[in-house]
Every structure is written in C-alpha cells, then in structure tokens.
Amino acid sequence: MSAGGGNIVKMETSLWFDAALLPQGWARHVRISIADGVIGSIEIGGTPEPCDERHAVGLPGLCNLHSHAFQRAMAGLTEARGPDRDSFWSWRALMYRFVDRLSPDDVETIAALAFSEMLEAGFTRVGEFHYLHHDPAGVAYADPAEMASRIASAADKTGLGLTLLPVFYAHANFGGATPSEGQRRFIHDPDSYAKLIAASRAAVATLPDAIVGIAPHSLRAATAEELAAITPLAGKGPIHIHIAEQTREVDDCLAATGQRPVAWLLDHQPVDRRWCLVHATHMEPFEIHQAAQSGAVAGLCPITEANLGDGIFPGQAYLEAGGRFGVGSDSNVLIDAAQELRLFEYSQRLAVRRRNVLAPEGGGSTGGALFSGALVGGAQALGVEMVGLTVGASADLISLHADYLSLAGKQGDALLDAWIFACRADVIDCVWRRGRKRVERGRHHAREAIVARYVHVIERLCD
Image 1 (tube, rainbow, N blue to C red):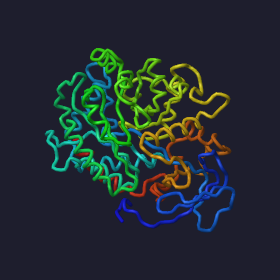
Image 2: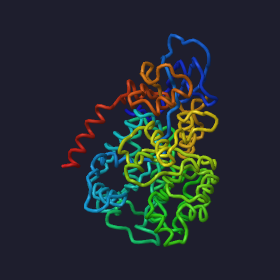
Image 3: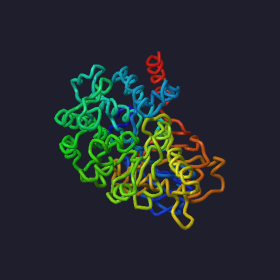
Image 4: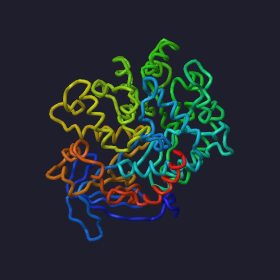
C-alpha cells in the first residue's frame, strides 16, 4: 500500500455518532459501518458497540469544486498596493511572474499542503483546475502529464479525492489573440490537449475513484472552433469553465461577439448538468434564469472573489430560479469550507441589506440550505454520482468537536448554523476519506512532514 493509501486494501471500521446528517435529514444515534472505502450499512437508533469509534456530530464531507493548488504558495504575497488601481488583472500579472519559478517538485509540495489543509477544513474531494502544463521555457515535458502526475501524487499522499480538470488554454483574449509570454506554460492546441487528457487519465489510474474532466479555461482563452473540438473529450465527465468573473471580461466579450459571456456560452454550447460555470459573477436577469435552467452548477469561490475584488454573485435571484451551486477555494488564499459558505451568505446580506437571504422561505435554516446546496451541487460538478452518507457511497465524513462552545445545546440544522456562522476552523475534529481517518484533532496525519517540505520550498521561492 502506498504512503497515501492510493492502493485499495481490505479495511472495515464502524463509527457511531450521537447525531448525523443523512440524506433524509438528521438522525440520532447513528452507526455507520465502512468496508473497503465505502459505506456498507447505516443503523439508526441503536447503541454503540465496543468496537465502534464514537463521535458527537457526523457530516458528509464537501466537494471543493475549484482549486488552483499552486497558488496556495502566493497567499499573502499580493496584498501590497501597486502604482495603479489594483484588480484581478494586476493580481494576474504577479501570478504569472510567480509561476515562472515553479518546478514539478515545487508544484507537488505546494499541492500536498493545500490538499492537507482542504481535508482539515472539511473538504474531502477537490476539483483541481490544472493549467500549469509545461516547463519554465514553455516547452512540453516528455510526459504531457508530468505536472498532472504531481497533482495526482499530492492527492495520493494526502488522501484527498481528486477530480482532475486539465485546462485548455490557447489565447490571450477573444478573437484568438496570440498568448502572452506569461502564459507560455499553459498553452495547448486541440491535438496536444487531447494527448494531455489521455495522459492525465493514465496519471490518476491508480487513485481510488479519481475522475478526469476537461476545463476550457475561459471564452477569452479558447475560440468557438476550439471549444467545439475539445468538448467531446469530456464524454460524460465534468466540463468546467471560468466565465463572467470580471466586468472587463464581459465588456471584451460584448465587443468581440455582441453577447455577454454566459449568454454566448448557452447559445453556442450544449450546456447541461456536466458543466460548472466558475464564478458567473456578472449576469443579467435573462442569463441568470437561463443558467439556472440549464442544469449546470455555478462554481462560487467567495473568499477568492472578495480577495480579487471581482464582485458579488447574484445568489438570491439564481437560487429562486432553481439554480445549483457549489463552493471552491480557487486561489487558496485561505482554505476553509465554512468560511466560503459564510461569505456567500454575508455578501448577499451586504448587497440587499437583509439577513438570512439564502435561507428557504418559511423559517428555514440558512446554514442548512448552504450546506445541502454545496453538498449536492459540488458533487454534481465533480462527477460524483452518490452524494452524502448513504449505503454504497464513498465513506467521506467529518466530525465536529463534541465540546465546542458554539455547538452547545444545538440540534439539527442549528448545528450547521453554528458551524458556518459561529465557529472557527478548529471545530472540525476528524475527517475520513474513503473510510481512512486522515485528520484527527483537527490535524492531518502527515501535517508535520508536509509542512516541513513546504517551508523549504516557499523560503526558496520568496528569496
């Protein structure tokens, strides 16, 4: 068995929770039996057996539907004001300079830290939107999936579930503009991209339940003809795309095509439940309705969107139109599942100056609505067919500390309200991924070794 547990072994364990969130709702005194990485049985209302590991509150792990793992190493490095007005575009210029220095070993080390922190934060699977493909000179490695293999290795070492989303990136802007020098490590044409997808599938083949989708980076980075050429590579797998993240992107799309980005995509691609529209921040009412009705998932990254000054997603209108959503950590400036959900709600409150904006009507729980929405939408976006704590699903669970003060006296969805709005990250006690405990007392089991390697890399990169 590998150090990260990528190879399957026979393993059985039983967990007993005083309260657990099941697909049908909250239940008391829940015994979950796990065999070979999946949930084998669920018993409700019984008493714990001597062999059971006992915990207070059990929840299904969440999917982090959008991550650029290497950007974890940039956290805190872009918070000084530049000579002009700072924006996403000035941040991107700094990112391009940073990425020039990264070796395959560096990427693997940084990803391992990010992935361990995701597990500690309550994420049990990541959608890695992976666009760093070539060497620092922009030359392809002998193995097209050299960098993708490093992402897979980091997932294996940490135990995090992986949906790998190799990115197609061909142009600097709409109209097939020539890519810039800073983009040289990202660039593919449809033929070389097809080889990348095949090599990426081989790279993750030994990981349990790994999934490979495709990710056209954005409408500005791929022409209509290129989109048509690459989307069949997804098959039934996920298709993710950055879209309508910044107002300048919307303006450029209008100038080039006569349509706004989301409207153009919906008119020119068969957008369905395989698709994840990452950010989709700037939409007009007709786009909101059409996106919601398409079955696609809106991939929201509230911490990063706030950090970059992108804008506020039209959450209330989108959910009222029947839209699905999930959350991701994107730039990984701060990895915290609860904070992503909290900031999603808080951004809506600030925009409309009301409280509990995203809660269902009739007195429903805001925390419950946020968690259940992110659980189902995130799983759909990452190609996970069985969702939550149910027999046959991957045994991906988190437990909350029994004695955490803000949880005292809470039951049912009030526990989710407290976790999302009134707790710090240390409320998470244990995390299991495919039945193996990866986090205990809030710390990943390999944290010390992962951190030591990361510190060595970041000190060199920041020198």
